[in-house]
Image (tube, rainbow, N blue to C red):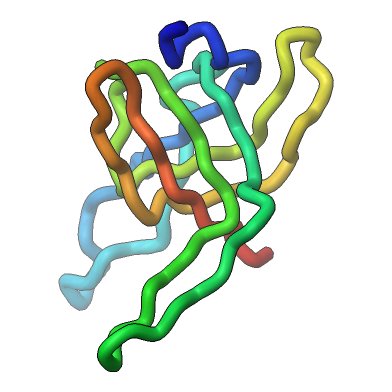
Length: 117
């Protein structure tokens, strides 16, 4: 069974449209716009997440994951804003930053972090 068969959810992927620096040469406040609406995906929260400390290194464990089809136009600079099921019911209305994007043979795996309002 391919990963695409598990993608029973739909996500809105947003991209920052404000890439110009401010008067001081620093990045200006982001202006998010919908980049892809209704992107097929599979969202879940792993049940056993824990951070481990090994040899003075901390492992960052994020509690939200998202599978996307390989070839989806997404980067770690984008964000996820809302996830629906196939019927349009809300699975998660949260906004998530993409902390890690891992390419697998037939899909992408995203580690997400919830954005605090």
